Length: 472
Image (tube, rainbow, N blue to C red; front, side, top):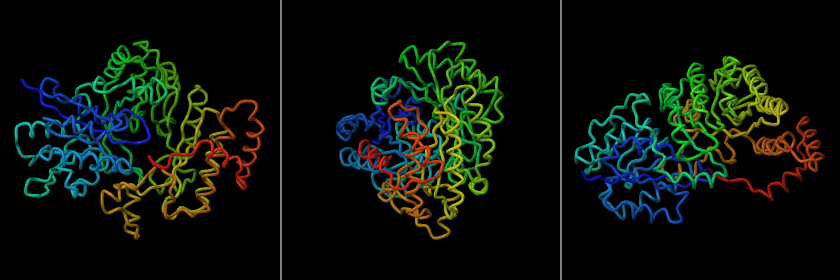
């Protein structure tokens, strides 16, 4: 049987996480019938030429698309593909087309969009394209037919991850990602979705508060097999909420220990999950290699936590942090500031909680991000009702960045200046530092305790030496 080629493209960005979305949909296609070619724009000197060359005889081009700067490259590649091979359908999947299924089809270079979980949907699309059948009724996708009519098909039910083929990392140049990351770290996803209702997040809109995860024994077996082939030293679990079920986490740790893998790993954890996690389970995770947990705090203000529907308390954050400290596990505790009409005292509370966390351990980090009205989030819907204007086209969405330092309409220039200085000085004050910098560290701690960031000479010099990235 002749194999047909399916080309998958990952747009350029400044981070080097492995393209797990493309790996998932590409691995689930029958390798006896399809030749999957993954092209990562971040790894190519001329991505457009690489894609066009690969499209010769291809069945379709699939592109994974995040909201923001990656849209620029996704559009450029899709348009170039259409100019070179107008007969090849272009299918967009990922977060942006999941939220803007129809709007993403406004550009003539995009023919089909996939919503939410993509493995089963993309496989069904590919099968229909191969057979020359219409996409009418193909669950989980929206498409434009030859006459220009756009059809939105019914959503697809979330499929258990165990129903899909294992991710075939041979589709990726794994060693190149190691080099770009600066460490032999493999990215892996063990679950999809999230049960929670955070008002700043698009997950509740995309996954309808559903969650599915791989069985622990399969995770251990797959990682053991991957280690034999790729010899990684660290696993970065890319799950939205890795610690969703205590029994599953415990079994994963047991499976990793049983395989005696010489690795470390990092994963996401909610503060309420950390509070409930028994010490013996966390100890087992530590023995199996857990080096860091990412615990979203978002705000140090109880009132703001209630407003954004985080469904955690500040007390749970500190209980979780103390557990991590006691077991020698690093912690990443992100905050968000600049929510619509957030009062100054809420920001003050976040800064104070961040400093308390930093003082607990030199292995704790408290990054600050500015609220972006991300599409699909409840807070965004409220902001639009109150007059906020969202981007109206793909080109406008390409200029939208949710991790950059551009100020939101709800944060004053003075407040942002203060936060930017705090971000610098808290690192200088609490990161591990050589002896020759300890005088600077003491001065930075003095500044942080008093929230006195006037005349930030050290910050200016630091930014001159190492300029921050502007966009994701």
